[in-house]
Length: 239
Image (cartoon, rainbow, N blue to C red):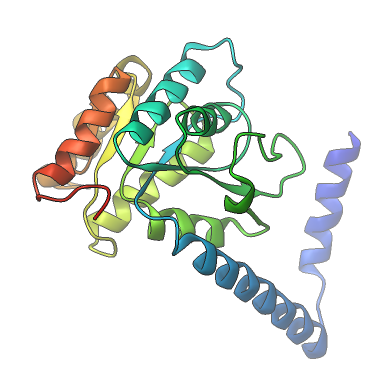
């Protein structure tokens, strides 16, 4: 058993130990204040950024990977179309998207999360537009509240988490409808097949729910879909 497993077992044991009322109150109250602090800072900074699109994808994608280059191109084109770019602030696809926005001269926003591995802010985030979070749910609130569209490139559990939360919030009318784009049909094929061939036939979703997202292959298609969505409502990024 390695050191990491020992630490996890110790945390599990601690969670089962009976705590006194004062211990519970002090821990919960302190966490509430930390959550409030992150919320206030996030609302204060992000309320001023203007129209932005969030780009999601794996933190493990190397610079030599085609998905890295694709994310960079998408962000560059979005910026040239008047949108800023929001990412999770880390490496991989997130770094590529911030890089594209940075070199296009646009707004490059990073919502970084403190993790024991993988995550540290990438160097292409605007210095005044970097936020650091300890709580995933606060960070996701910022993504949902301040994005005008979501673009999901290939990624893992984190990407799926962010993607499905956005779809769910729109499906349940907790968020206003905005465009959601999955990029790389080959990568997302298994996911979309499962939805259309398993989830839909078993009546877990309705036919209309399939219209909540689209799947494309190229940077141009992704950006055109986002821009076209708002043009259909006679809205532009500088509104």
